[in-house]
Length: 113
Image (cartoon, rainbow, N blue to C red; front, side, top):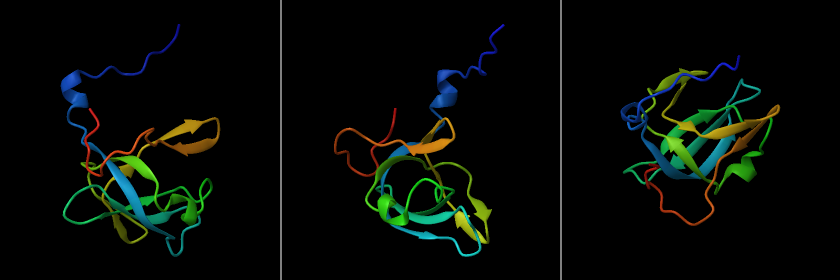
């Protein structure tokens, strides 16, 4: 028998605040083999810092300028002594991580619905 994932009501999906953001800068987190510290413009008053384990799949240079969906209302987390204020959305393809992106120009801060 196939095990289906847990179903969520539409009202639960609406709790997620996913916005379009552009990566402004990216650097490796000191002391970590897998983490980048990204500064992402999500159309807010100030860009947000997000830590993400993308070192195995992207160079820092490749990430700068990428336009990606960002979960902006995820509870902040302290990782390697730094705060992370969101999560980049990606797909797992076999053993690879692939960032989601857009097929058209979309302004930072546009909400995913």
